Length: 95
Image 1: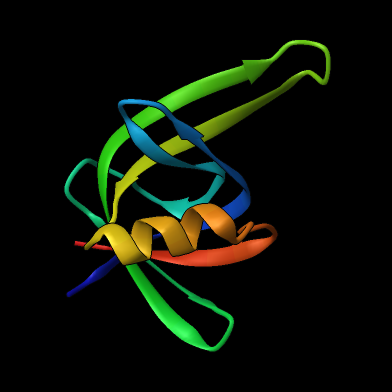
Image 2 (image 1 turned 45 degrees about the vertical axis):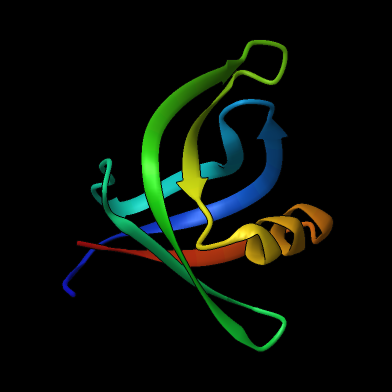
């Protein structure tokens, strides 16, 4: 795998019918559907496939965010990631 970007995770939330969304800023490089998001969380290396790249504006704060809809490997990982709040993490993006 080759690193193609660095992403600053600010928050996460779940959209019913779509899945887990990781919200943040692209710090370097590119992000695209099918790429892999990799970061360390509670001593574990987490790998998630990016299935959709979205864009969000917060007009009141005058900020723009990138939302990455990610796929979990299995139901256990999905539940684990929904229960834990990922914030202020730096993730690498691989292709």
